[in-house]
Image 1 (spheres, rainbow, N blue to C red):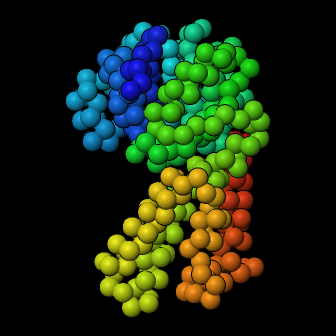
Image 2 (image 1 turned 90 degrees about the horizontal axis):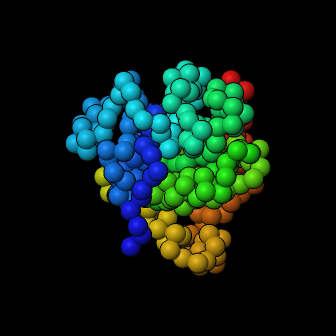
Image 3 (image 1 turned 180 degrees about the horizontal axis):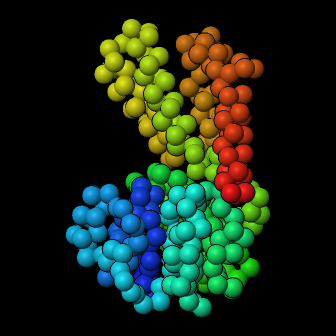
Length: 274
């Protein structure tokens, strides 16, 4: 069993929405002392407010000690306002972690004191169940111990990977940041197709949900590639092959996903340009 998560100072979470809340749950499960956590969120959901109160976590404090870590988890559209609100909390030893889609290290740095240690991350919503995927990159001021700290915090909600080229982050956002929505859409579409094939709606939904989640878990546990797993379940001339002939046609699923990922990556770049 890993040692409890202990920081050399307070953690300030700015934004306690779905992603911020999911990460906070992960940190608390790792043993982070709730008394060392502070949250800034002008309009938290009622369930979030209740959970913070249950753990004794300070919400919108008027003052707090210098944070060891600040995690920015607001909507990208309000980044300038958020940075203005928290810039005074940044100390010389603070590690500033941003999970905002499309917002570059340079844009974050412009709103914070010179020399701030900044780590930009792109997590995704399966973080809520400890199965997230987060990609990280640090600015030139981030030291090895800061990378280790950021990695430990983000590993609380799943797998992590570091990159050295920030230009990759828009594609990361399009594939894993937005990716869970594509999978949920697959489950929706599969259920609707089941209804069209004659299944009762509730049974079609159950089959689609269990199939998508089960296949995902098999992919997670297996050492085989997705391609091999697909081939293993496809018999020549069988029912699966008939379906895949449609999905793998030149204008099929792969072409649609390429267009979808391109659109998401371009939107990420637009957010970065403001």
